[in-house]
Image (tube, rainbow, N blue to C red):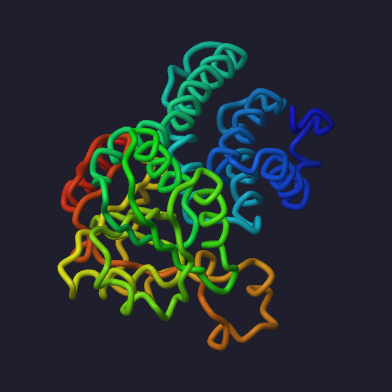
Length: 313
């Protein structure tokens, strides 16, 4: 248990939660921050000594607030945690606290296993859309995009991938290394070279940190620029995203994105002028997206709102 030395909520603070989360991500680099966060929440449900359901919910919210100060993708972490709490607490509360705790643990584990399987399910859905001898453009690093390209290559398809280096953290190089290791033809390009390279591209594959009610996406900075350029060239844009990234948000523009998603926690301490900082994410409206491949199926952007309602019923 990650909380094995934390017998009560009083000693579980943001620093200790972040330490546990960062340790999990270091130990398993293939683990997404959202799934790691769900594991922490499940372990907390099973370990915390709460005596009332209200006390449990209050303590869970404290843990979630702590997780959301970590240096990782806060957008998907927050939406995943909200869905987890919704699903785990949707159980009969007329028994003893121990029975309720057992039921919530069982439901939590069911939800976690479903979310763990989401990536491979999406890869199976999306891989047939990767055509043999095609040229693909992608942005930054996405585990589900990587696994989809792996699945297409395993199906004996030959294709070429261009991946942006994705400043300022240059996360695109991580995808480049993974694809190159599997023998897939891949080239890293400058973020500013997207327009130049698009005349060679057949399809754009994108991951997402969040999918909002309108069917638009929140993703690494530069995604919106790539989507606009691809739309101008009439190139299809496919977004690959797990359902735990579906968020009850409805941004209309970049200003609607909260600072906690745009800037790391160490920049939001009050001493930094955020107007002079580069945001880490941007919002891409649904008009630029052709299809979304999710563990719920293949969706048009307009279908996302209906799926969100089902998730929270």
